[in-house]
Amino acid sequence: MPLKVALVNMPFGFHIYPSIQLGTLSTLIKTHGWDVKSFYLNLYFAHKLELPVYNQLCEKRFLIGEWLFSHLLFEDSPKNKEYMSHFPSHVQEVCQSIGCSKEFLLEIKTKIAPEFLKWALEAFDWEKHDVVGFTSTFNQNVASLTLAKLIKEKYPSIKIIFGGSNFESEMGLEYFRVFQWIDYAVVGEAENVLPGLLDAVEKDDAIPKGTLSRKKGEVIYEENRQMFVDFEKYGAPDYDDYFKQLKEIDPASPLLENPIILYETSRGCWWGEKHHCKFCGLNASTMKFRAKAIEKIHTEIASLSKRYDTYRFRFVDNILDMKYIDGIFGKLGQENYDLQFFIEVKSNLNRKQIKTVAHGGVKVVQPGIESFSANQLNEMNKGVLPIQNILFLKWASYYGIEVSWNILTGFPGETDDDYRRQIYIIKSIIHLQPPTAVGNLWLERFSPYFNCPDNYGIKINNPGKGYSNVYDSTEIDLMKIAYDFEFETKVQVDPELKADLRQAVAGWKNRDKSQQTPFLFFTKSMDFVTVFDGRPEGQPTKTRFVGPPARIISFCNESPKSFKQIISHIQEKDGQKKDKIDEMENIVKDLENKRILFEERGKYLTLAQPHNSHY
Image (cartoon, rainbow, N blue to C red):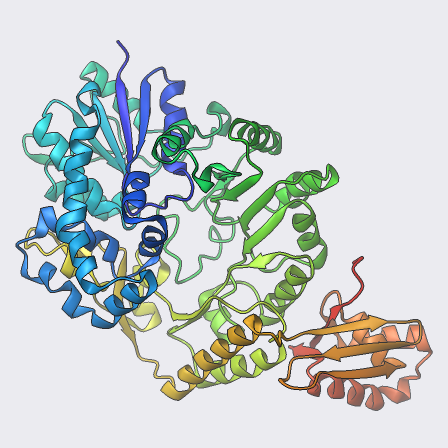
């Protein structure tokens, strides 16, 4: 009989789409000839709490999702009991967002979650499986650990395996050391490790590299430095169990109608290989960029679309391979398909590239825009300038792409001027899509800031907020399991400027949702350009420009242009004489003062969007 494997996805993993981890591993395990079934227990709990409540809790910080499932493991721990009193404002915000009382949150922790775990132990045929594997990413760790303990206590012969981002590096080593009911843990990518591990379990053979195991009470581990590159070896993710269980729970679920499918086209980060963003903790030991063949992607997207009757895809890649812009989205656009995509890109795309991905079906994009300060962007090692971020927002909006982005603050090298500059810029671009929020950066494990704090004037003080209240045990080294950390820098920015930036963004968001939505666009005729400006509150303005100003607005529309390029263009179009350069400088300055042109490092970009729909 082939080995029987159960894969488990616990709360608070997102319920609105299937798990890419379980889908990928299901395909991998089936390819090697073993039986596998995925258990989406997060779906059951989401429906138990009601979907809007569950969805909100998935997004909340300070490990509240972990705390809500911590009762069975840490109920007698004093700090665990103090979570609500330790984070009163956060708890109040959570309660307001889900429309519940603090008493209801406490009921989830002390009654609903424990009862759910005990139900999950009895409701499924765990004893029919030789191996039960848990994927653990962010706020699903404690729920996974607790159910694993219950299964192991009732069925000692079952092998418990853990993997996922919570088990990267020393985090996995510490969790494995403390929680003795875990038999094995895969550290890093599974494709080159899990088949060998399952084969060893089946044949009682030697455990492969990249696996945490035990021998006579000692933790055994040898790192596997081999990264997965053979994408042709396995097919598309297998999400059958997700949809089967969703139909059993709620046959009329809206999640069954045109569902979102997670899909992976690449791993690692081609930018991070050479210029690791200093605050980024992704790709712990797998930064090297590896990408699937274009033909394989087309085939698998077509297969998944047909299999799950859907048009919607969410790429889980950290960054889009640039060859996919034409190779994937260019081709999809040529065929006029109705597929829709979420992707992550670098924000230095030009207008043509943004147009290509938009026409290829990209509806939502995360471009890594985090600042409009050149100094901060340089400090981050982002490799882009504010003018590139603005250009991206301009053309993404023009082509109907929703942009998911935030403004980050709290960088070691920032200054008061960084805040003043951003507040100034916001007034000019209030007609573009606002950020989701302004927030301080996290100090993430594996980031350059974490790896070399002294180089950046950073002092790491404690594990991130919530760890000591969730994992309240003298047996656990919290500094080893934490993914984010509390820290301080030597930089002291004026608190009023921080408040002013937040207020500017709040006003931006309010205007964007108001009946007076800001706008800035221009219409173009042969001899003149008219700019319609609805950025200031009150009466919009209409200004007609003729001659060189009109030429400049049109010329700097698509991409930033230098003053030298502007002069050459005007001379070519209008026969402008060289002795009129002073006059041209005044014209450019006037357009800049009117916030129609944006200048950075001697280059100028037209902030107004073209009214013409054929760019």
